[in-house]
Image (cartoon, rainbow, N blue to C red; front, side, top):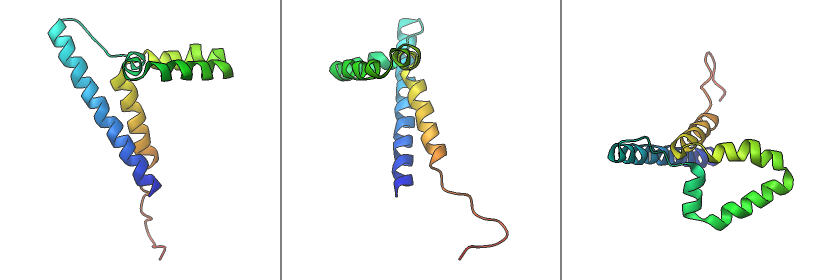
Length: 105
């Protein structure tokens, strides 16, 4: 059941990545220049206070972690981050391969 839940979340993230890919593509065509929605900008649009509180929490643990890991992820295109996380969830929680040669009944 847990495997199915995480696969569903991965599929929803993959669908969100496709939506952002189409959105960024349409904006790029309309503006005649490359326009990408960064994950940090999208998070600010949704809830700015939660991003600031997350930043304070991570900086409380390690400033190095915020500057070199989280900031880099937040500056990536939203479709890329959602797509990678979605694919990882789908691959990590896929059903086990059937055994060949004998059955475990």
